[in-house]
Amino acid sequence: MKLRKKKAYSVAIMGATGAVGEEMLGILEQRQFPVSKLVLLASARSVGKKYAYGGREIEVRELKEDSFEGIDIVLASAGGSISKRYAPLAVQAGAIVIDNTSAFRMDPEVPLVVPEINPKDIKKNNGIIANPNCSTIIMLVPLWPLHRANKIKRVIVSTYQAASGAGAKAMQELEDQSRAVLAGQKAAPQVFPHQIAFNLFSHNSAIKDEGYNEEELKMIKETYKIFHTDKIKVTATTVRVPVYRAHSEAIYVEFAKEPDLAEVRRILESAPGVRIVDDREKNYFPMPIEASGKDDVLVGRIRRDPTSPKGLWLFVAGDQLRKGAALNAVQIAEILCGRTVPVRV
Ligand code: A2P
Image 1 (cartoon, rainbow, N blue to C red):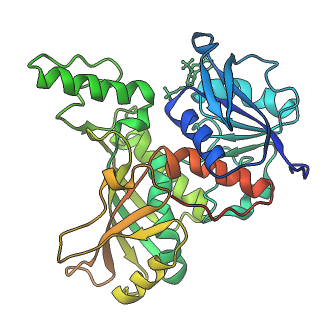
Image 2: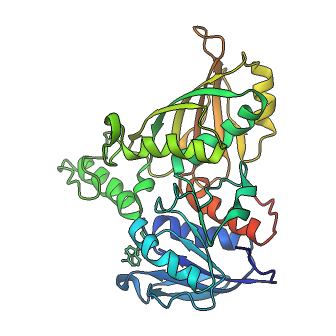
Image 3: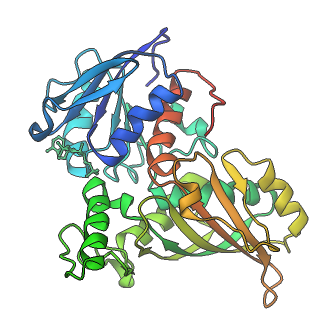
């Protein structure tokens, strides 16, 4: 499906009160997306809550089956089951849905898009375009330009994932538990299965095939779909850490040919969506606190593996709520509208 060319578009955010939804609102405004009408949708609990947008106040409405009349673009981030139910209704009503949940990502009819990597896939949509998993996006933005220059054969990744990946309530839980522990009280986990303050644990998604959790399987399968190949061997260990927002990842890459460090740096320096933070003298490398609120994925610790000539290590940090979710979705919307937006923070 194509978006009919217009001066401005009516946009609905499904899950507008969530951590990603709120970020979507901010990014639309910051990038001056041409919005003719903005509809903020959430559960009945949030009806009446107000958000400022473009100098106006917009009230949140309850998400209902008839919420999509006259809407051109739906940015969806209210959870997989909500997307499964409402995305087809939005498409029936004539909208294109950019879905941030995992509901349709592996559907062969649905493109899974990172604008820096496979923007052309957007054309093949039937009304729904999926936004990849946040850890996958943050890993693949720097890996894609390297892969184009020297084929990647194997990736071994370990993640350090922020509370933001589990939504606004999880971020609040990290804050509340930290206060409680510092006050000498016990942490009472409610959103996460374990204490998140002053602790870390294996990612809280369900354990599936061969002992891999869902997050790890997403990173593996989504890489194949986005890169259009299953020739790369990907394996992952995903971990939740007591960081507010922005995920970090230690990525080990094996290439077809021995990588040249100077060339790797040159490629990353000019790669869209990437910023090198790699100062060995100062021991200064990517940190989630510095990636937070930024568009670029920070890349550093760029070093060869002395035990394997074709191996390379990277350490990356990227804002899970921005490039890992809301920004990627808005960039897809911009491509649908034929816009190119250089604004970056
Ligand atoms: P609400 O705030 O009204 O619960 P997060 O991922 O940060 O937890 O955010 C989830 C988003 O999805 C919120 O905007 C939340 O709205 C929305 N949401 C959750 N359940 C529903 C539902 N049944 N109908 C509509 N929106 C929902």
